Length: 251
Image (cartoon, rainbow, N blue to C red):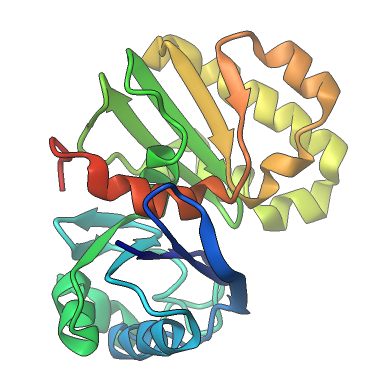
């Protein structure tokens, strides 16, 4: 059984085919996320990704936003005409609203498909299934997922929580802000974010992943606490295979 795992971010789409053990077969692929990106264009992009990879029996797609049972309730970035934090396009918003992307990709590829929030797929690749486990992903913006005893909780868009009036965590901790303020100050924000959310969740373990997790410094790691683990971004691809193993998965 081979799984094509597709990690769709605001800036890049990464993909790889994994076997039952989670070993990647062939090459891991990465392409820029194309914009403007309507729902129909997204499905076509997924068909192209399938064609570019080795044959697989099933497909996992992780994408940003609120995804319920494969249906898009809300997605950021893809509703903007030129990508993350650019001008919102009303026609793109309409194309994505309540779009059953899971059904559409399955119909276009003829394969079983799971479509979930990208942070939830990432989380499936790192959790151990014990206690309350929270995952934050740092990249274009902030992603999050919560598992309790290996059971996925309903998704919360923590990225839309405000740091202060008019400023979302998605912007405050995202890549554009990191470039603006520099990595040193951005690391300070990572520490502040963990300190602010710890008493809210009282997690047993927090995992921090995503493309920018590699920029968390050793000094920051030492101050985050023993209950915080930095994980590799390619965990999202492994999660694409492992997500099929969760028989009690909420999706």
